[in-house]
Amino acid sequence: MGKKKTNIKIKHHNYNLYSKKKSRGKQTLAVILTVAAAAVLCVVGYSAGKPIMDYFKNRDQYTSDSSSVWTPPTAEDTSHAETVPPVIESVESTEPPAEEYSLENTFILSEGAALNSGSLNSAIAAAKNGGYTGVAVTLKDADGYFLYKSDIEGIRDGEGVRGALTAEQICDIITKAELTPVARINTLMDHISPSGVEGIKFTATEGWTWLDNYAENGGKTWLTPFNKETSDFIGQITEELSAAGFKTIILTNTKFPNFNSVDYSLLADIGDASKRLTALWRVVESARRAAEKNGAEILPEMGAGLFETEKLSTDAELADDKEKLKNLMLLIDYSAENNTDVYVEAKAFIGKMNALYPGQKYAVLIKGSGFSGSTFAEVKRAFEESGIVVFSE
Image 1 (spheres, rainbow, N blue to C red):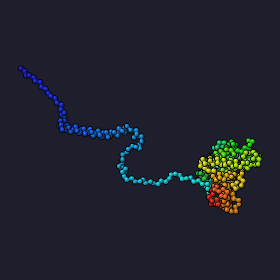
Image 2: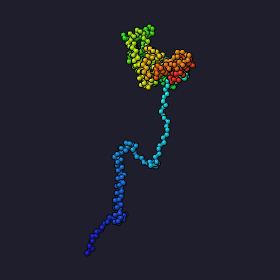
Image 3: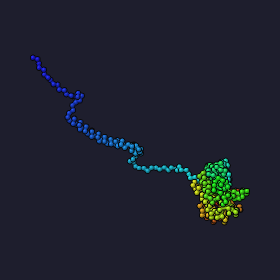
């Protein structure tokens, strides 16, 4: 009988051949350490993660203003150090010095000096050699010719312009020579401008052009101060010259012509002293306002008429309104009556001005041709001792 087969069951156990089986105590400790590590990671992760999340949510806010970006402190951080007041070093001002401007010692050049650069430079050199610190140039003569290239409508393209330089070029040449520039213009004595500018000349009541004499005797037109066009025209000139850089503009021949008896029946208002005075001041005020737009001043030029009782048709008819006159500085043509003691005579002139025009500001124009070298110096000394500006010619 053969052997009975027995079925044997084999148990298979999954063992890791490379690790040892941990004891129960070690397993418990591992669980505790794992939980603790997870808790620490949660805390640290939240602390670090929240700012990061906030940055990404609001990064536009942080990048829009670079001044708010945090930078780490350096090794030399002194935020907790004692505050020391800053040392302020004195720094010299870089502003340019104020431009000096004085009318003292100004020489009036010959009438055609500014016609071109050659004649102007020669005249300037002569003035500097004579010790003068300023020069005055005539830019509109007694005929009415413009001795510079004006841009005024009705003048710029006409025959009334004789100068080759603009007013700005003339002023620059004088300034670069380190002299004070002054402009001088004839106002109402003008028979040239009416050919290009409407409404500025005297016209008879019948409509024909009035002349100061018969045409065959050289009669000429004049500008009428009664018309607004005239005051506007003079204002345009002073504005143009002041814009070019001239800070002082002398107004000469601001007066009426000498009328004949028949003229009073031909021209309106010339016999009314009040209207005449108002008309003259309209011209002066227009010139003043225009010059002041560019920080300049006007100097009406007057002569012996200041001391005349009857001032009609003199160069001082404006002086019949002394209160208005006080608002301006005048240029007075001075000439001595005799040369016996010119110093004393000049002092007497000053006293006379103080008596008749108290508080009036003025300069004097001494014409050198009437005095010798020594007498000229004495006259000049008399005025300068009293603080009066002297122009020479």
